[in-house]
Length: 180
View 1 (cartoon, rainbow, N blue to C red):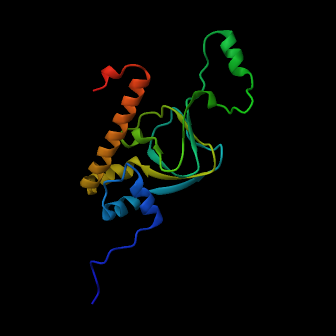
View 2: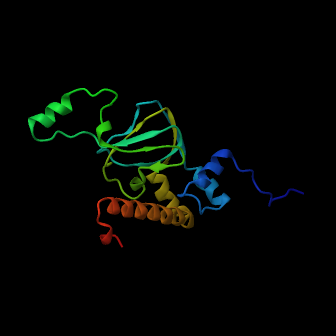
View 3: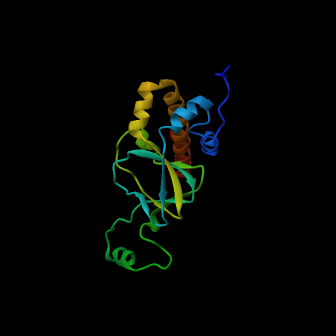
């Protein structure tokens, strides 16, 4: 007789996904459904993942390597600022002066793209060769229609993550009294 209730083996990728805060509350069966919607992409050092101002279409999870998030340099008024910006800086690549974060394995970025198609607020670039897991907004919206419980668990964790980020930013700006 065939055992219909036998547990499926977990893969290293599923185990890694389950450790991410975004997917931590998913059951193994739910995680397998989500895994079927994820794509892997490899990036070379220095390769742009997305540019500031581009329409956001996906959230990215760092599986290996490092990603640099930076704001692109904008021309400032005043000739001394413009002259300084035009001068080459040793060991600094274009956009590094607006560095926001450097992310390693287990972190994710670009999460607002799951919610809307607003322009990206920063550039993402591979700081080292990296493998990223990509979750496209269209696949997430489809998940909302087909597996609302799974999508709501992911949405809840996304909301917690964004709330924590807002509190951290408000505290850094000295405005923590305005965050409820």
